Image (cartoon, rainbow, N blue to C red; front, side, top):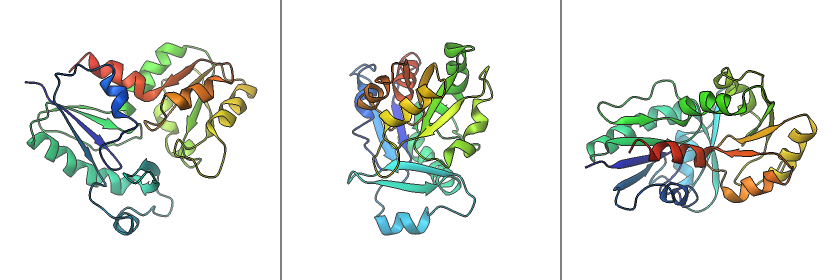
Length: 223
């Protein structure tokens, strides 16, 4: 029988993301949720996943509701072991709950679904020659994640706003700034952005693509 595994780069279960999957997946589908940072204390996370000089960054949510900024390369290495554990537990399909780019993740038998490989061509087909505005969680990701958007007909424009709060622009402010700069369509480029963030962004008067909702609909067709 098919079994879906999900792997967040933070700690599982992700109460913000799993309801989006549950809305489109059959209740009879067995699921197993895992996180790269499962069981780790804040001190252990800061020690083992600390951002490195000039390294690409990721941001994720922990079970206590706080967020953590972590090094992408260290996260990718740890994620590989978690994928192997999900396979060993019988998962036939594994969904990464992160839109960040991972170059080396592999599974032995399970179908591995990485949003980073699905979103760019899919979004490019949807927006065609319209100007896409992308909201990323961290300003540093504007440079580190830019390469994946090569399929777009026009270079996107960016703004940064974290789905987990903190300093910087709110989602509504980021969306408004992109609209003022000429965006025609907005994309929320993080699995942590949920429906309330989409509604905040939509106040700018533009269509908004929510990454996790789009990925969930696609996954529902193959599991």
